[in-house]
Image (cartoon, rainbow, N blue to C red; front, side, top):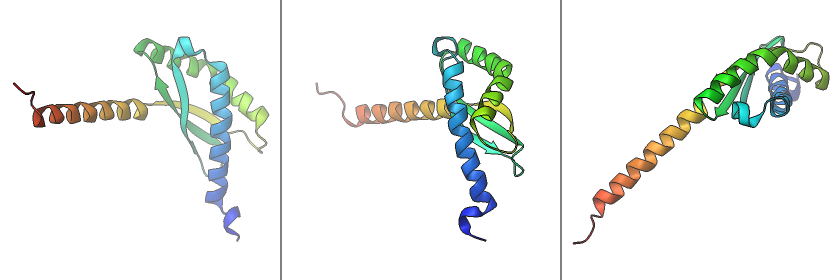
Length: 129
């Protein structure tokens, strides 16, 4: 079996294709002011390619996040049909969406590290009297 036709390579190609198509659909279907910024961080695909979980990153307020969760739930089938029309596959995977907090957590950790560095720099260089 050639390496480029292995199942894991195929799944990786399908994941990337789905990620691109879903990202474009999300960009078109969701209003930035209403839901904040939604990004497709990753797509997990089952071995049989019949189902996929989409991990969405969110940047915005708590109210925007709540609204984003509501609208993503309401528009799941619409996005699935758009993706199915744009991607040539035997079956369009059933999509499930999950808001992924990793971007927000990463930003929080970076802010804490920056604050720690600032505090340490101030302690090492006390102001001259």
